Image (tube, rainbow, N blue to C red):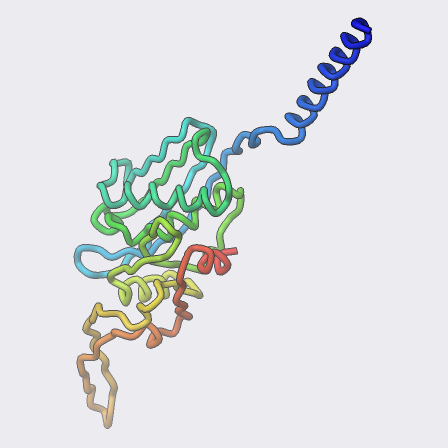
Length: 230
């Protein structure tokens, strides 16, 4: 009888090890991240008020959870660092990918004053999602907007200048935060017309995003914006 009990216990022990091994095999930890680089064009505004296109490169690689931002090989300020931290966390939440075993490095080629601040937060998030998924983005789309912890896209400044420079760059679609189709940023524009051989000019104001020839679309959150980039 004792021998029978011992044999049963041994059998149960072997079965438990086998089942545990099988469970570990089928439900193993996440596969190591593969190095991925995503390039994105981000509209910005110079200190002069003119728009410019900045180059954002997002690098994701195996690491230890570091999130780094450099602008023209210089460390960025508090607002940009904060935006990058929120962007990476939102991207992690939406993709289901942990960040503790990877490094994310954002490199921005632009005037430091042009990109400093929260307005690139939404773009940082979109580029991070693409990098985590090993995808590339539609380069004919540009966007502006800050990023919130819940994934919503917040307001940005300098909308008319950003739309204009995106149009000059050749973008087909510009995404902006919900409610900013009519921008509070007024910008003077000289409009001239020749009538009867005389050149008449007047000062006009650009305040409505719909006045531009390029398509402009409002987006509420990152998931809303993501579908335009793939």
